[in-house]
Each structure stands twice: as C-alpha cells, then as structure tokens.
Image (tube, rainbow, N blue to C red; front, top):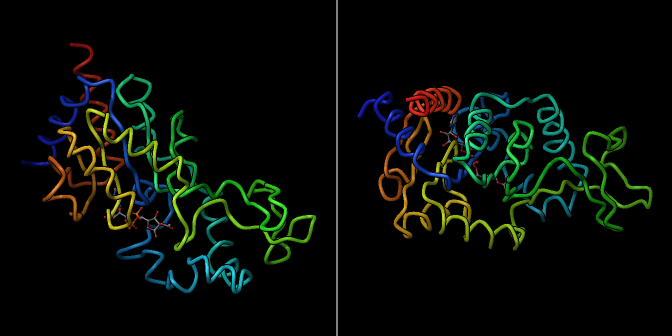
Amino acid sequence: MKMEELIKKAAKDLVHTKNAVALTGAGISVESGIPPFRGKGGMWEKIDPMKYAHIDAFLKDPAKVWNVLVKDMKEIVEQADPNDGHNGLAKLEELGILKTIITQNIDGLHQAAGNTDVIEFHGTFAWQKCMDCGNRCETSKVDISRIPPLCDCGGIYRPECIFFGEAIPVDHLIRSQDIASKCDIMLVIGTSAVVQPASSMPMITKQAGKKVIEINPERTPLTDSVSDYLIMGKAGHVMNRIIEEIEGLLVL
Ligand code: OAD
C-alpha cells in the first residue's frame, strides 16, 4: 500500500480507540536537530558507545565521558524544541486517543510538546545526580566550568539517564509491560528496535492480539514479524497527515 493509503488506514484505526500508546525512539527527535544513535550521521558512528556510554567507562574516567559525550548532549538537548512528530502525539492525547508514551529518549521533548503521561524508559537528561550524596541539580543549571561538574559535597554529577550496563528503572519496566499488554494500538515511532527490553514492548502488544503501527523511514526487525503495517516516512510529516485525517473523520 502507498504511504497516503496507510496514513488514512492509521487514522481510521486510531479514531476508534481511547487507549493508544506510543513507543518512541531517537528518530522522532531527529527533526528537532538531535542526531540518532545508529545509521548515517548517528552518534555511534562517531564514538564507540562501549568506550563512552557504558557505566564502566563513566566510572573509570568521568571527565572523558563528560567531555566527549555529556557536554555535547547538554548543548544539543538545550537547543531543541518539539517538532511536528512530538506535537502530533500531544494532539492525539488532547483528542482522547493516546494515553501514554513510552520513550527511550531522554530529551524531554514529549513533555515540552504537552503529553502528560510519559514513561522515560531510559531515564532523563533533564537532571544530574551527585554520585556521592544523591543531591539533584537541573542539567541546565549545572556548572560546567569544571569537568566533571561537582556537587557542593565534592561528588561528581552524572545524568539521570541510564548508561549501557545499567538496569532499566524497575517501576518503568513493569508499568510499560502492563500498558503494552492492555492498549488497543501501539504506535512505534522512530526506533531501530534493536535495544532490549524497550523493543520487546510491541511484541507484548502483538501477543495480546492488538495492533502495532510503525512510523519510520526505514524497515526495522519489527516490520515483518510484529508490525501490522509500516508507514515509511518521517515522523513529522506522517503525524501531521494522520492528525489531519483524524480531524476530518471527527467532523463527519
Ligand atoms: P536509533 O538511533 O537506534 O534508531 C533511530 C531510528 O529512527 C531508525 O530506525 C531511523 O530509521 C529512524 N528515523 C530517523 N529519522 C527519522 C524521522 N525523521 N522520523 C522517524 N524515524 C526516523 O535510536 P533508538 O531506537 O531510540 O540507549 O535507540 C535505542 C537506544 O539505543 C537509545 O535509547 C540509546 C541507544 O543506545 C541508551 O543510551 C541506553
């Protein structure tokens, strides 16, 4: 089916539910100027995640990880605003169709767009936590004139997102699994679906007999085995068109 037909199909599927959920990944923030991790122009093309994004690397040399990864990320995230993809999901919530977003992103852009129930599966970059005393400081306020930045107690600040080698916060995992098993439709937007356990959420929805709709310019491991259909396009354009179609259906 052509993209336009699939967009109309998705709008028809969504307009009938009050219990849709979205699983999002880095791709939804690409149009906000935040690079993805994998593929062309991806962050892991430039730096080796095992050397700079693994908890062991951070513990061994926090200054190195702050200098190569965290400082740049702070600058990029602080400059980013929600795009049409995020705004489309906020509109779906406003229309009473979308309940929850499970996001692998740490950029806070879903909340900035207006979604009120966002599970930050990999934690958040909005806050830093002192590794000694646990004091929290907003990332935008942390003093980076010294790297790594230090808490008043002398401890090192780390972002409140998880590094490779760290566990998913257990309450996030349990709630996401529960939501994935109970929703009517899961929208899977802008994720390569290769990082577990996030990528198993659509499988839970599928196993419960419910619908999985992917939005991505590329195919993923879910496309043939799990997704009901893939709308092959960028999140911003596809979400704009889905919202237009839904609004059209609602006035009929
Ligand atoms: P990836 O970088 O692995 O994948 C990004 C996906 O977005 C790809 O499938 C692209 O095809 C797609 N994409 C690119 N531009 C897009 C656009 N404009 N609209 C829609 N889709 C687009 O990102 P994630 O799947 O989020 O974990 O990666 C998962 C995890 O791996 C991240 O949370 C991070 C990373 O290592 C940790 O840091 C723990």
